[in-house]
Image (tube, rainbow, N blue to C red; front, side, top):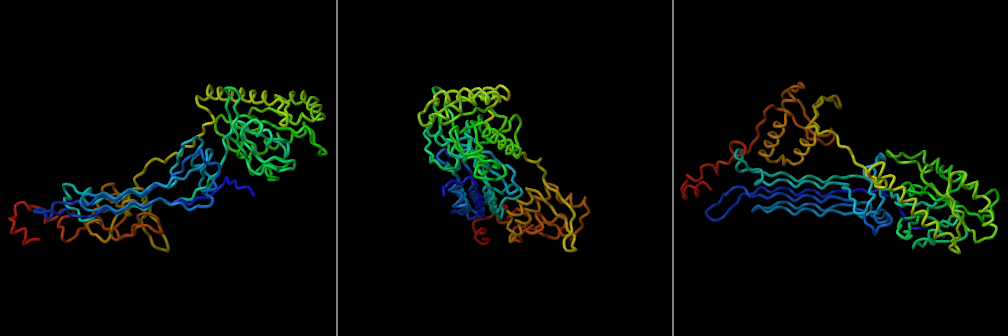
Length: 479
């Protein structure tokens, strides 16, 4: 079986941020010289990056679980933790990123394009970064945040200027082999091509890519044969080439009926796609018809007989032989001129090359937090949701009273306490910050002030206050 993989499911886990450090600087004659705890390092992110050397998604198929490196904790003497290394996942050009609902998150259509699948966790601040005039010697540090965890689905849609479409054994593989360096398998039986092939054509100053897919048969748009499985690989093409076998001996087949079947299948498949502004369905894009195998005498006669009828349908017709290379030079130059014209027209009409399709996710307006009154299992509570308050809760070490007090200050500063009062919360009511399943739960007390007994007023340290007035003997007695 051909080892071509164009769909994968990836579970990405970003690295955790390192915890901040709570430390007091100590040196000779300065036993308590102030806080010197360093910040924790940020966790690494999981990033997709287009690599020209990749042609399939096979690597990610075999290793679907990808994890970035964690950040390391901060240390004393103002030493920060090391940032975790990003996990770079190389993918082919033309990879589309979707979520579990099938929504497009990114379209990696160009060399070097990147998309951050999962962002690394932020490192916690050390107590030296938390010091202020009001809190001169914080006895706590913030915890590092967990990295994002996401499931994504990748689909490969090859990016080619020209797409070859035709029945099995129509000569598509022979054609792409004759005009480019691609070397697909070629044989005289149906469905020789089991995977898409991509080649580069150089015709004078024209340079473009050409792709073929497994042959279409009647009903391919409904799932028959192999064509439907790989039709996504021609969705981005500028020009479609209908390759017609003029030497077939199958009963009921002729060039005109074959062309009608191909057009019908493209029309049916196009109806299932969603197109951006200015994009045309596949069956409405520039197309030409190639009458193949004219090295056979009967095929040449048939090609000349049907050529006028096909031209009356609005198609340019090229008669070629991949065996003797007759007509291939004219075909490659014709395709080069058509592609150049399509690109120039796209730039004139849209100001950009329509082959460059980027997907941008619109972010919702930033809201500090929301509060709602809810009920679960007969128990009422107030639920607070918001990026900042939920992040602050995850950064808090609840074994440290001063850290809890610092959290209360932060929540009060953005107005959560006032909002709870307005919505009708009373002292002792249950409040949940975050989701109902794993959020932080507490009994609300207005204007809570928590602090460690040794510290006195929150953020202060009586051991540091007025220490300059103490004699050396008094300092030794106190410490």
